Each structure stands twice: as C-alpha cells, then as structure tokens.
Image (cartoon, rainbow, N blue to C red; front, top):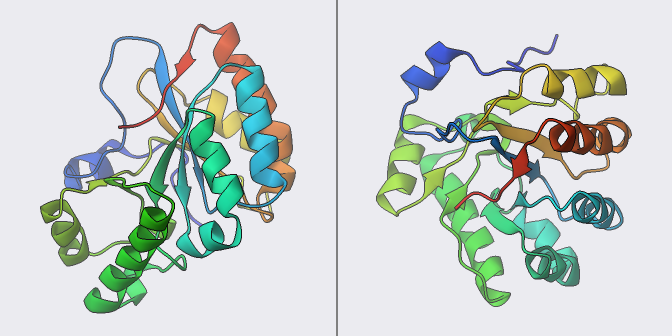
Length: 211
C-alpha cells in the first residue's frame, strides 16, 4: 500500500527545517517542478504547455537521462527554465551508502558541467535522504528542494482527475509543486498539467523558477 503526503504536513516541515518545502511569500507565486526527465516527447510536451501559459518551471533531471537527451536538456534551458540535480541514476538515499550516494550526485554534476551548466539545487529521489547525506550536501552549498504539494502523477492507481485535485485543492502562495516528466506519470500528467496551469492563471498565480 502506498502512502505519501499530498500536502506536506507542518510537522515534517518543522522537523526537516533545513530543507526547502515552500518559499515564504505573500504574493501569488508558485513553483512548478518536474522530476525524472528529460524524457523524449514528454518533456517537449511539458515545455509546450508551459509556454502556452507563460509559465516557468524547475526541472530536476536524472544525469543518465541528460546523457541520452542532451539537446532536450539544452532546450529546457533555452526556454528560460531552471535545472536541478536528481542524481545520476535515481537512487534512494535511505537504501544507498553515504559514499555511493554522493558519488552518484557528483556524477550527475559532471554530466551537467559537460553541457555548460552548474546548479546548487538538489532534490532527492523519492524524497529519501539521510541526515548525513543532507548535511554533506548543504556543506557543499546545495539547497535541498522538497515540496509543499505533491500531484502524485506517478501513482498509476489514482485517476487523472484525482491528480488534478491533489494540486488545485492544496496550492497556496509559495507552494513548490511536484510533477514528473516521465512515461510512468504521463497519463495523469497529460490531464492534470494543462488544467493546473489554467487554474493558476485564472486565479492570478505566477509560476516562477527556483533559485
């Protein structure tokens, strides 16, 4: 049975206060994020939708996928979006040794550097990272980006309509919202993303990049 917070619990935010769960603001600004790409066709589709609504987003990319899709990676940047590190091979920190996890993150950094990019944004796959791993990354100047609102588009047991409701019922100023530009998530994403963007526009929200 799957369990996850759609709206991140206040206690979790307080306990892990060194992570970025949302961006404090009184303005109607939110932060769309996309994990697990770049993915041929799907990421192009996401970029097209963002452009339609004049929205910017932050893409947490897997290094291995960047190696497979370097032109698509460059397109994300050319469109004015930001990039974050999501490890080279989507490792779960809780199940990975300290040394192996940091090496995997560094390997992703090296892929980015080959494409003339550096970033201090990092999101742990599955949101699973140990205190020791996180401490080392912060010492290196990394910002560990979590989320305030989880669309759960990756969950193939929920309907696309439920995916949409997960977002629009929980979003508020400063929310960091998670989608995935992956094959697994695309059925839900294809329905929920355009409607989310329309909802945000209709309600006066602006979508900015993280920095």
